[in-house]
Length: 363
Image (cartoon, rainbow, N blue to C red):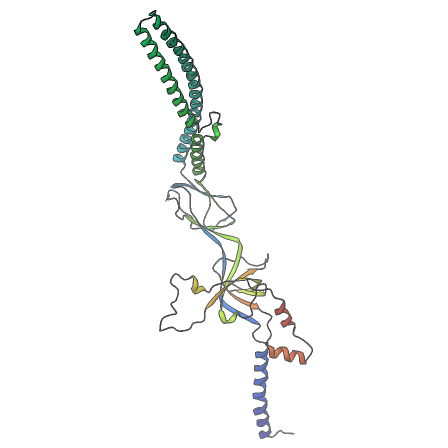
C-alpha cells in the first residue's frame, strides 16, 4: 500500500523539527557537565644552573639531553685559585690560634710583672718611710730622702702601667683570659674565612640539585661568571599540566574532579588526572604590563584562569616533556536543574548531582 506523497511530506515536516527539538533538548540537558580546553600544556620543574664561583670550565661530565640523578657532577670549574685561597685561609686560622695563645701568655707575664711592681713599690714605701725618720736626726742627707721619694714614685707608676697593660691584654681576650681558643672572635673570623674558601672550592664541582634532563650544555674552556646561567635542568619526574580555562567554564570546577588528558604528540594514548588547584588570579594579573580597564576604550574580554592538573602515574604511558600541547576535559559532575527534574520523573535523583555535592572546595 503506497503512502501518499502529501502524507509523507506532512510526516517529515512534523517529525523533522520534532527530532531536532528532541536531540537539542537532550544535548542541552546533558550539557554543562564536561568543560574542555586545548589551551593546556605539560609543565615540569626546571631551573637554570648558576655556579656559585667564577672561572674557566675544565671538564664536562654530561651530554646534551642526558638524564642525571641528584648529586651527579655536571661540570667542573678550574679550582687552582680556590685551592690557593683555602691554603691561605688555613694558614690564617693557624696564625689566629697562635695569636690567641700569645695573648694568653702575655697576660700571665703581665700578672707576674704587676706582682713584682707591687713588691718593689712596697719596698720603696718602707725605704722612704725609714729615711724620712732618719732625716729628723740628720742621720741621712736630704738628697738621700729625695732619691727614696723618687724611687717610690717610679715604682707606683710601674704598678699603674702594669695594670693598664694587663687590662689591655684582657680586652684583647674579650674580658676572659681563660676563653677557649675556638670561642675567640679572631679564631671564629679566621675559621669562617677557611669555611668559605672550602665551600668555594667545593662549588667548583657543579652538581644536579634534582633528578632530570640536562640541556644547553656548555663547552670545555668557556668562562663562567658567578650568578650567571650556564645550563638548564628539567625534571623528568615531577610533571603536571597547566590548563588555561575561560572564566565562564569554571563555574562548577572544583579540586579533586577527574580529568581526561589527550596529548597532541601521542594521539593513541589517553592520560587521566585530577584537578589539583585553581589559580587565585587570571593570567592577565601576572602580566608585566596588565590591561588598564579604566580607559574609555575598554572592551570586555573573557579572562583565562590557570588550573593545575595532577597527572595520574602510568608506567605504560609514553614520556611527557615540558611544553607539550594537550587537550583536557574536566568532568564536573554537574547536572542542569531541568535534567534532575526529568531524572526524578524517571527514577529518582541524579547521581551526577550527588557527585557534585560531594566535591571538595576549590583551592
